[in-house]
Amino acid sequence: MLFIDTNPLIVPKPLTTEDAVKNKELVDATLPCAIKTKEENDFYWDKQKEPHFSRRQKILAAHPEIKSLMGPCPRTKWVCLATVLWQCAMCAVVPHVSFPVLFAMTYVMSGTLNQMMALALHEISHNLAFKEPVYNRWLSIFANLPMGVPAAITFRRYHLEHHKYQGEDAMDVDVPCQIEALLFRTRPGKALWMILQPFFYALRPMFVRPKKPGMWEYINFATAITFDLTIYYLFGWQALFYTIGGSLLGAGLHPVAGHFISEHYIFVPGQETYSYYGPLNFVTFNVGYHNEHHDFANVPGSRLPALKAMAPEFYDNLPYYMSWSGVIYDYIMNAELNQYSRVKRSTLGDEEIAAIQDREAKSSAFFKKQA
Image (tube, rainbow, N blue to C red):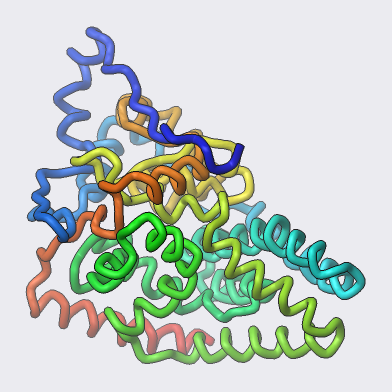
């Protein structure tokens, strides 16, 4: 059943005596967590830097063979091509079905596949489809087409900051705003917030950390709008409902959207990042392997299971999920969980933030020249 798993989090058994003697001190020093404090109606606050940088150093020291997993995955472009072509074919089918069938196809099929393409954008944002960055930009714009809403380039700009500055109050727009927590922390409020999540996810950066659009974003916008107008001209409003509606439904109250909650919401105080090892990884580029991904963002999703197998002492002792639907249910029904159940930190000074903004401006200028 989709929404009745009330115990989604699995806590592994403690390390064996032999493993504890060999690895406990090392592993304890590299858990994806730190000492955090939490006041009522506030986030968890951590005085330390994000935890995955130090984990990566120690894991690589223990397992240098992980370097063999780094680099682009050649399958990514073919998965994107097949999915975009399938979605285009479905646009020709949906004008000939009843509205109840259209809605079901939009929720089940387009919701899943468009969220899959959203996670393709996530994968490609790390340059994990091609070695050349510019090819990754073009592939992300192509994969973005059936989603109906231009997102590829802007997502990349914010997502890379989420990795480097996870939870930073001035930088990480993945963390909900205070107003979201104040308005939507009841059970009905959290359910409504989940339904509206694609809007919050898209609009939050504009208020928390607005950025001036660059040339690539204008290209992304133009191609997406051209695709939408073409689909509408050829197949009518039903096709747009299928594409855009699939993106909105698939990022809202949908089983695949459980990854938005499972990745960094605090279900166990002290642990900041969580992995999911269930079957929906098959249609999400293994984004569920989230501790592994944050530890090594240059390892493609297809190789994250191998990464986990190479360094079991760093992953097998961490709580994990097997049900994203269960995560959604527990998040809504558990009164102690809400938008405040995230870690925030404020470790960057004004000079560091200014330097980051300067580097970002220079990077945008560089990619403009490359185009």
